[in-house]
Image (cartoon, rainbow, N blue to C red; front, side):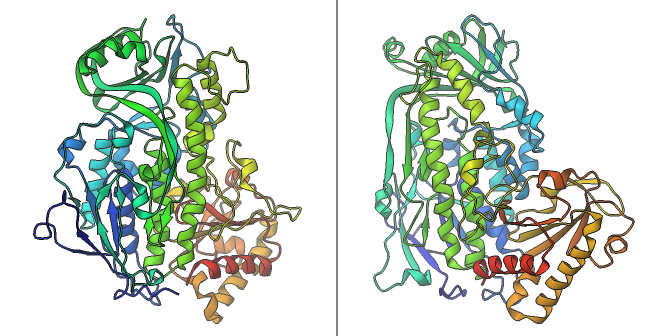
Length: 626
C-alpha cells in the first residue's frame, strides 16, 4: 500500500521548455498536486483540494491532517484570456455541485437566470416545443432548486473562483510569455496537457514523482491518445451589447431557424450583453477577403432575420471549426489525470462547455483529497476514469448529432423521416436528452465507489436502464435528489443539499419510514453505536468522515420523545412524506450512503433487518476507507 506521509507525497515541478522562463525566474516547485490550466475546471480542482484538506480529519489520519499543497499554472495571462468568449452556461446539476462547494452564491449574484426559451421559424413566427424548450420543463419538473440556466461568461466565473482560491493561499502562476492570443478554433482555447518524465528508480506506487512540466497540445506526450475528428463546419460566435432589437423575447434562451445559417443561437448574457451563434457555410465565407469583426456582425444581422439587431459594442467575435475528440483514458502512470477540455472536446451546440468539466472536477476532487490525506485507498482514484469517461463518450456521440443538426443538416445516424426538418429533429433530440443536458440524470455504473443496486427481486441492477428517466430514480449511481425537510423545534424548511455540503465526508441518510417502524430504527441505532464503540474495525463509521442524518415521518416536539432513543446524527422531519416518496422509501424505511460529491453510493431498501443493514454499510466503508 502506498505511504502518503508528508515526507513521501511530494511532486516536484520544474521548467524545461525553451518557451518557459528559466529556473532563475521560475524556481522548482514542491507540490502535492500540480494543475496545468487555470480555467474553471483547474480552478475548481485547486479550490476543492485546499478546502477539503483543511477540513478536520480523524486523529488516526497518517497525514495528521496536513493541508494539501497545490500549484496551478496557466499558459496565458489574464488580460489576453479575457478576450476569449468561451463557455457561458451552467446547467442545474453543475449549479448544485458548485453550491455544495460554496461557490454558487457568488455566481448567482452576477449571472442571468434564464427560465424561458423561445424559437422562431424562418418567417419569424414563434414555434413551440423546439429549440431550448427543455429549459421551461426543467423549472416545471421541480426536481432541483436551480430550475434555470445560469448564464455567466467564463471570465467572470474565473474571477470568482480565483478570489475563493486566494483565500486559501493559492494563486495562479503563468508559465509562458508566448501569448499572441490568435486563435481560430475551439481546440485552441486553452487545451493544455502535462508532459511528465519519471525517474526509473522511483516507484509510481509510492507517489514519489518527479515531473517536468511543459505545455503541449499532444496528449501522447503522457502516453494518452485521443480519438475523434474535425468537421468542415465553421461556427461564428459574437458576444456584444445590442443597441436595439426587434426580438420579442430577447432575454430568453433562443433559437432562430434559418435556412442558410442553421439553428441560430441567442443567449442573454451577463452585464446586458447577448451571444449570437450561427453556422457559416463555405459560400458565405467566400464573400469576404478576411473574416473579421465587421464580417461577423454583418452575417449576424442576416442570420437572425427577420429579427433585426443593431450593436452598441462587440465584446468578442470569432469563428471556429467544429470537432469532437475524447481521450482513451483519463489517467496515466497512476499519478496524472486529465479533466475538462484536456480529455474531451466538443462543439458548443448543446451548451455543455463548463458543465462536463464541473462533473470531472467534482468527481476527482474529493477522491484525490481523501487519498492524499491517507484516509481512502488509492484504488478509489481508478474510479475517476471508470465513471467519467463513459459519460464523456456519450456526450461526444450526442454532440456529433447535435452539431450537424445545428448546422442545418440531418446527421448520418438519423433513422427517422429522411425529409424531416433538422430544426424539428434538433428539438426532439434536445427534449429526449434533457436529463443529460441538465446533468440531473447523469449516472455511474457499479464500481469500487458505488455499490451495485439490489432490487426487491434480488437481481443486480444497472443504471443504464434509468439514463433517460426524468427525474432520475434515487438509486445507487445517481445524484441524491434535493428535497425539502423541516428542522426540529423551528419546523422551518431546509433543503437536503444545504445539509450535505461537499467537505470530503460521506453522509448516511436514515429514512425511518413510518411511526410503526420506530422499533426497527431503535434496534438499528443500537447496532451502529454498539459496533462503533466496541470494535476498532468499525471506527470509520463513527468518525468525522461519516456523518448521519435521521429523517422522521412526522414533526414531534422532540425526536427522542418519538423514537425512544437518540437519532443517528442530526434529525430532520418529513411530515408531508414528500422526501420519503422522492427517495422511494416505504413504511419499512431505508438507508442511503451519499458520497461527498452528492451521488448515491449505496441504497438499502428496508430497515427491518438492522444487522444486515449495518453489514452492507460496513462492507462499503471497509472497502473505501483506510
